Length: 186
Image 1 (cartoon, rainbow, N blue to C red):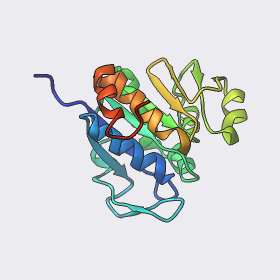
Image 2 (image 1 turned 90 degrees about the vertical axis):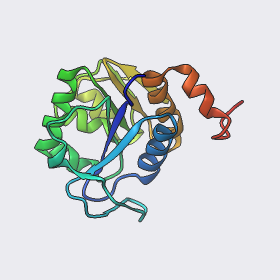
Image 3 (image 1 turned 45 degrees about the horizontal axis):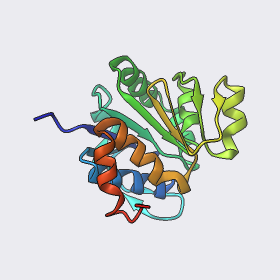
């Protein structure tokens, strides 16, 4: 039996976009992944719209570990992730190990800040210019996979983003098995 795949969802000290954090984490768990939420500490993080999320681990405790995917949610707080050297180290280690990185909404700006390369991305329209000026090719798709990086537009695409991660790590059969229980089947 294959080992359970792992995901690390990065939480800024405050102002993460809770839809992107919660929907992504929930879908990944339903898809069979072990999900950890990491914050600057294990103190609750107040999200952009007021929800509070308690990180499972502090960043310092996972900075030398690798995961099948590391996920960067958007929201105003992702600027703090862009400024954090530990996040940069974590992402660069992830790239070297061949793992995936996911970034949604303004999350791709964290990739830009830490020099993580992806030929093509999508992101929230408010950071599109920043990404293209930084050398990324913007695609107006809900989800884009490029160079082991999965990006998505924002809160309204969180389910599609999470399902694409499950499909990439666990296969289309697993993803298809989630659609009906999530009321996303056509």
